[in-house]
Image 1 (cartoon, rainbow, N blue to C red):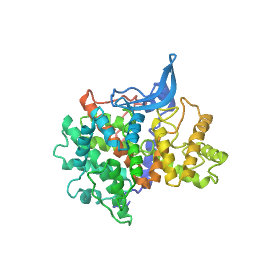
Image 2 (cartoon, rainbow, N blue to C red; image 1 turned 90 degrees about the vertical axis):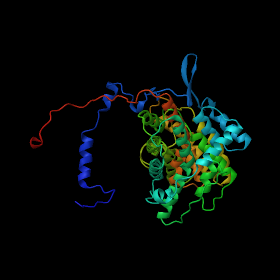
Image 3 (cartoon, rainbow, N blue to C red; image 1 turned 120 degrees about the vertical axis):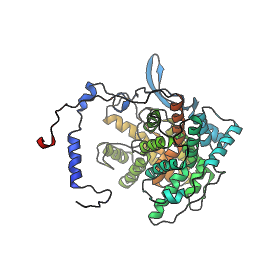
Length: 454
């Protein structure tokens, strides 16, 4: 065996170890029914196990009609305010709304003009990194996985914070504000460092304190820092829609679980980032884009319903794309008839596709949105409805904004930092016991054998 193996090498010995682990760790699926285990902390109807209480956001997917719970068009509320109303207010007043959304989530109320301006000033004040941080941390070991780079940078920031372990509310508020402010820099600089390692020019622009978060992202990313107001406006709406989604989603629940242990903010947010990067969570929009790229190459006539239907059927039959049996962007753990975030993006995508000359692609997305639920319902036992989710359109938006694929999930993280910060503080304010769910042991007990007797 080599004495200095390369990272990533899987030796035959490791293959054998993995096979042995698999053979000794498979649980009979019938046991989950036998012990009434809610796999994924959800029942068959998709309803989550209640593990806590929150005042931060509310998701409505069903309403009671004549004493019966029936599916309804989805609604999402931040601190009791309908997200659709938040977006409508921003559109009507032609301004950026992510900072207002972050204020609402983290402080619990809508700010007046003076309070909002002070919040923006605080973000601008904190939108800087320690001396030589870019050189010593971000540029030192670039990664193609920007989420890993982002998590590493967050953990490294703890070394520069003299009060990293202080979990008093003012200190945690400060830390969350700082992370909210620098996430765009950490992610974009991480991407630029990876690009430079791959042979491209290196661009490290300083942030403009007058810019909104959406403007900052575009200005830091593009070589000439140029962007249109509409581009920044659309990205701002995306950030608003991704800022929060209840306490039960995987990364937010992770935030609660890790916070309940009493750990520091940097460790907590690194854990949330690790959760979000998974393709079943924040990485889903990348899967949607790649699925559509495969579809556009496979389907000759994008307007032919039968041809598109045949491709979608092949996806479900595990004969197309990644052979996972999934139509990415379709379905949600909670929503059934519609995802309100997808509905909001749908209208913006149509306008953006016209401006970018990509209406044919938009029409293909719309066709898949219409046919997908019908095909899924015809193939699989359904406990609730299926509709397009926010990932179905968000990736297309980023694609039309010429944002690199490597930043799709980090963009989600930049927005969700507002929700994670709110939930971390809520857990600290109402902290009780450490969160510790139970697992039922279903293995066999065995006698210990001395090494010489095995």
